[in-house]
Length: 326
Image (cartoon, rainbow, N blue to C red; front, side):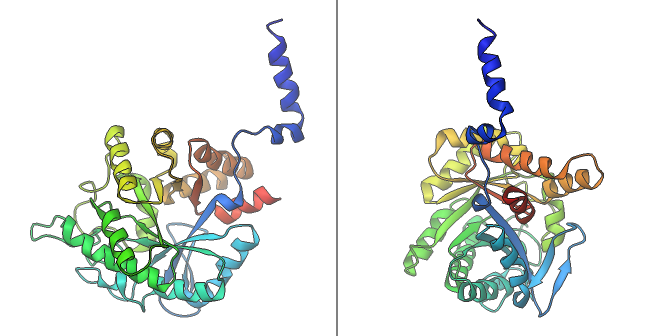
């Protein structure tokens, strides 16, 4: 009799319709968020060498990205920008004439129903490439950076962002941004915090794409050490206590254990960010013929969902959504 349950489960798996009905974890286009890089100029669609298949887009050409994504069932977009100028304090990050703010305003008017998320940080805008204002000794001044980040978040919300996504990893940034938004009467604007952002090797292609590599040193002083899971969980839960609405785990694939632990500790929605290095790792394996494209994309992103993430941020969003909808 002991063999009967196994036979029964095999019968359930062999029927594809029933197998799909009984799936415990699913992934759907509505759960995907597409990152987009916006740049200055007009008529620009410039492929990014470090991330084949991903481009820099000028604001006027964003419909060429947004409309196919919406057609595939994706309705949420995360924006990064290349500014027209950089300075020591990254002031272009809160300049309303810069690409991210212009993109938010343009898309809010053209597509009122889409969900717009703005990456909130200083590294792309600061001449030194670090995520905040520097002290004389070259370290990042946490408290002075909070003032700048609050300005960035308010500027992005005024431009049309539904949600801001602080990725700087400064202590107290969620509370500071929440207070700044509320003071401006923007309590409806949410905060999607990069709550568990590790100091990872998997960000390399992105830093080329965003022109955000540090000009000296690295970011291990404020990003989280991959060796310290208890510290990572503690940091993420601090963001939750400060008022974050969604917590991001990044990079998603190497942090499935972190997402699973967070899922047990908070009822807040979690988002797993499959970062640029993960994108290139999977894309290279598919291109070489080592992996089957459809199965690999579904399996990898389902693993992120299975770890406890409600949402998945991925450069494969449109391709994956089309596979899921086929």
